[in-house]
Every structure is written in structure tokens, then in C-alpha cells.
View (cartoon, rainbow over the protein chains, first blue to last red):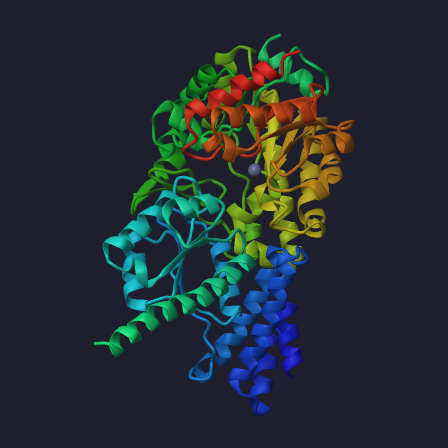
Length: 227
Length: 353
Ligand SMILES: [Zn+2]
């Protein structure tokens, strides 16, 4: 059953997946295991996308299949046992109505086991700040497709600094208008040129973040011992 | 040789007195030159013509890219225009509603079709309204045969995807309901051919068809050949038969589909920066002229030396026969005027025989 569900995600079987997931549940399979199967399917998709075997249509179809499966099992998931890789807040900056690349990133991240909140497109800077405060993401992903709207990325980073939130969140950027050098220029923590690379970037950042926490924690515990 | 003759010579794969220079000036850039907001420029036929002429005189390039997608704005479209939370919202007669940020270029707000059931009710936009053709007529009149006027026709694939269904829907439709997609593409092909024929009747010198949604990073060569190529070919061959010459542009690395592009019936291929001009020349240079591909990133943020170096590299790779030096894609909004001057002047100097 697990292999079938994985395959349905890889092949983007948007019409069959609901039936497969329901059958698996009736068989007594745990929602968490079904989630794992779907995630391993999306890992394959993300690899195919990276190797230019899959393009945008095929990848979107798989992501939609996974979404449909996820809709069924979401209420049944035992969240204590889900290994959430991290929380990501994502959106396209104000003045920019492009959505598709950012949605792909969002679906890929979910596929890789991240918890994702997608704010949609044309998101005002203040909304990014408020949502960062409320949702407390590990990573904030900003997308811009137009060279007129890319300046908003800098604006978001500055607004996070003003709100005192910049140190709590890693900021990554993407979209046709963004670049590695622009990320450095505005002090973002990373840039990815496509959805598969965005997942790798988030995974890498989460690992580094773990290390960074350790670096902070160790001196703190030392200090505590000598207090 | 004036610009018109020079450009025509290159389009026919000849060798003019120098390589024509023709950057892909778009709405954000022309409005910047004119000093008005992009939405003002694109929704007012008179301002549009003024901006085009001002940019042409300022830079002295060899073409004018008449870039309005379904040509001039009609009175009805202008009347339906409104401002909504800092955006200019413009319903068009193709059924698509555009959204133009006060500071940026236009984007699609509402695609025209919620489902394919609505396709049967879809009508060709009224092409008899005189306002549609005011800009082209004025450009031809004011430039008196000095410069090559190249008018845009909406590429079937791109407009079906972006304007009619929305990108995400359309990408899925290609797999889940290919038959409906083909029906929509047939309709968009009719629209493009009809618009192109009117432009040719009025005396446009050339036609530009940009198909960015068919970009090489977006769809596979297999999907390109099934959904984009046949309709590009229909439009190009129909317009060629009608006496027009077409330049076709697809963004991204089109290296794997160059031969297909050369078979569309287009007279000239406009290629993005990842395409090697020397390789393209060798593979398709005997069928089509080439157009490109000075990096728009370099024009946007490069130094004088970097821009000049890029222009020189393009001209050396492509040679002076059947070649037009241009930007690799539409210019980035915010491209400094000084930088584009450097690009155009370098092209003129280095492309001279
Ligand atoms: Zn392009």
C-alpha cells in the first residue's frame, strides 16, 4: 500500500490518491506512515525536477496529489510523532502578484516535512512582520518576480530588524528578480534559484541553526554554572 | 542606410552597413524614459506613442518595439479602469483583468476563464475599434520610414496560460485536460493571426511574438512540441504568407529546441543569454536571422566595461550577417538610462563594418 501511495504522488495521480489513502486508513495504516510515504514520493519528484526530468507541469501535478492526500490525513496525524523539519512562512512581496514559483516551493517544503504557512501573493511588509511575530517560523521565504518589487525584500528585512525579530528568523529569497548577490546585499540568509534548491537550502539552514543554538547554549550553561 | 533598411537587411539574413541595435524596451523602461508611471503610459494611447518616440530619439536604436499586447486601449477599456488598494485594475476585452501596481509593470489579476465551459462563449476582442490602431498608425506616421516598427502579437501559448487560465491552472490542464487546452490554443491562434494581419495591413514592418510561458525552464521539450510549437508555427506561417516577418522570443535556455523554432516560419529568433550565439548560428543560421542576447542583468547592474564586453562578445559570436544585437530578454524595470545608452552605443560602434 505504501509503495502505491508513494507512486501515486510521483506520478501525480490526483484522481486516484484519495481512494488509495482511504483504503490504507481502512486497512489500519497510521496516518503518520502514510505521510511518510507521500514525503518519500515528493523527495523523488524533487530529485526529478532538479535533474530536468520533470518540469513545472509534472511537478505541480505531484504536489497537488500530495495536497489531496494530506487533506484526508491531516486531522488524523499524531503531531507528536511527526518529525517536523521546521516551520516556514512564505509569501510574494507587496506589489507582486506572481504566485506559481512560490507555491511550488511551498508544496516542495511540505513534501520534505516542513510545516508551511503560505501567505499568498502581494503581501504587505507589515503582514510579514506580524505573521513572523505570531507564527514564529524558523525560516521566512520571500519571493519577487519583478525588478520593481524586489526592493520590498530589503524593506521586509529592515522592518523585521525594527521590530526586533530579525535574529529569531532566517530569511531566504527567491524568484526571477532575486539573486545570490542581492541576498548578500540585503543581508538575507540565503537564496535559491528553484524549488528543489529551496528545499535543500532550508534543510541546510535548519542544520546550521541547530549548531548555532548549540553555540549559544553551551556558553550560557557555562555561565550558569559560574553564576 | 537608415534604420529601417538596415534592420530589414539583417532580417533577410544579409549584411547591412552595421549590425542593427534593438534592445527589448518594455512598459517599465519606456515609461521611465518619459517620466510617467507605467500604468499611465500603458493605458493612454497618446502617452504611449510619446514615450516610444522619446525613447527612440534618446537612444537612437534601430527599431521601435510596439509592445502593447492587444494593441491600443479602447475607450471602453479605459472607462472600466479603476483603482483598488494601490493598484490600477484594467479589464481588457479579451476577458482578462490586468492589475498594474502604481510603480510597476502590468500583471494578470483575473484570468479570463474559470473553466473551459466558458470557452464557447469567448469572443474575439473587437478589432474594428479605431483606438486599437491609433498607436501603430501614429508611430508609422511620425517616423516616416526611418525606423523598423515591430508590433507585438499575443503568443497563443503564453496568453492562454497567463491571460486566459492562469499559469498554475494551465500547467495542470496540459496534463489533465489536454483536449480543452488545444481548443483554447486554437482560439488564441486565431486572435494572434487576426491581430497580426491588421498590423500588416496598416504597414507594420515586423511582428514580435514573445512566448515566455513556454520557457525552457518551465515546460519540457515534449510539452513544447505538443502545445507551444504547433501554434507558434500556425501564427508565423500565416503571417509570413500574408507578407509579414516575425521575430519569435522564448526566455531561458532554448538550446534543445532551436531547430524547432527555426521551423516555425519565423524570420528571426530572439534568444536568451544562456544560448550560445555561435552554436545557434551554426545550427540554424542558414534558415533564420538571430537576435540577442546581451544579458539584461548586465545591462541592469553592470559597469560600462562589462556592458561593452558583453556586446562585443555577442557580435563576435554571431557575426555581422543576419544578426541584430539586442538584450537577452525584456529589460529589467529600473534599468538605468545611462546603462542602456552604453549598450546601444557599443552596439553601433562594434557592429560597424
Ligand atoms: Zn525573455
